[in-house]
Image (cartoon, rainbow, N blue to C red):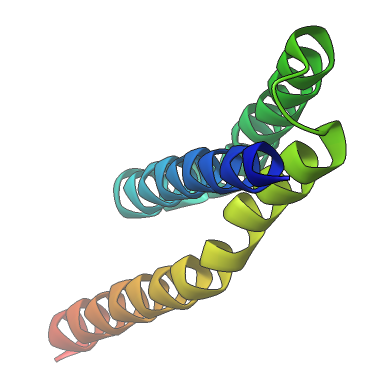
Length: 109
């Protein structure tokens, strides 16, 4: 049982890292090319699904811990931080809109 919990915590920590990578990628896309931001969803989903497939195959082949614990840890690690990261992305988006509005107001006189 201890190995199951440790495996879930490790999978959750790596899932948190995946969520952070997705956040930084999305933020970079939003700042550099907002018109191409919708394409970042595909790349983010590919990364998340690839991690879940990796957890499944590693967990099923090695029998380190119960596969259910590993998958739940991985999903929780990717999902829970995204509430925080989504809020941060929304604030970045609002800041971009505010700067864009200020620039348009300055050019209008």
